[in-house]
Image 1 (cartoon, helix red, strand yellow):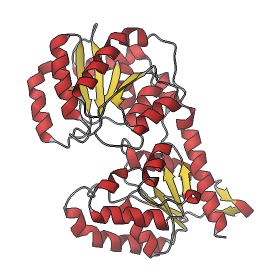
Image 2 (tube, helix red, strand yellow):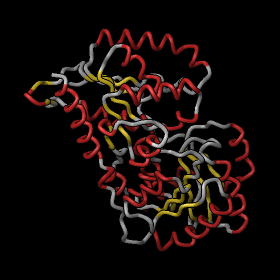
Image 3 (cartoon, one colour):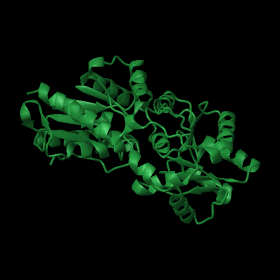
Image 4 (cartoon, helix red, strand yellow):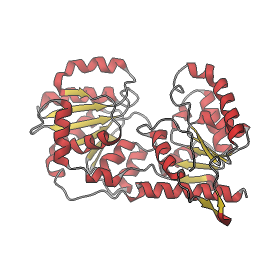
Length: 366
């Protein structure tokens, strides 16, 4: 079996790549040209820094992490290192390993000088750069010099069959039990992601407060990790109209998606490929989202413009208008036969893309 060092599975971002990459690599029949077998230690993924990378303490402990990573690579002797964050790039470069860098976080372009320097170094030294969307590649290319020969666009995967197989009525009953309330004639709006201002939750709450005074048939459900406690204190003003349901993973998240009426993503960031939008479209749900390039690309690729309501970034009036329009259409939208085209985001396509990439790099180093 191929073994891969992984940070525990998470929702979105690198955690998604880690989950499916693990499945991709754990195959006994993995061979490259000339029938050379892939040894257990040939591929390693460094993604251990995620829990502390956003804290000030990180800079203090990074030298120790760097040393541990170098020792780890020296002991395991992998031929390929897959870096999930810019902080994992340096040990692979120091140890002169074939580096595959996954570019799923472009906020590094706007962070401190160390993060941006590491991003530039990764782009320059990596054997391959993996982008989850063409938009991510275009965004990075507009700022840094990117070698086109290194670029591989492998979209994030979503479990399409699983999401479409869940019964809507059963999911709705599960949601009623979860919220401990009847949802007859109610329209449930879901926000899933970090509870933070960077994700636009403060804008969503202000718009929902205004909207809930205009209509009494809506409820907002928030799911995700709490990054801004001030926002959570603000929720107390809404009573039963706004519910926080903690952090859900796996099957519970899939059932929740099928049980709600629409999904909203008011992000303030130029994200590369919001996973919740992909999952909502796979579940045949209306989505309301900030009009950023990655989401525009996603709706267009899935031929799902009729399900996508996009509003101007950070504009409360635009969000209010779009929410109102979609809420009025939800009843008919739930019975539509339209199904977004999600083949580009299948797990099979994702795994195939990674296998081709790893085989190519290994065969070039025979």
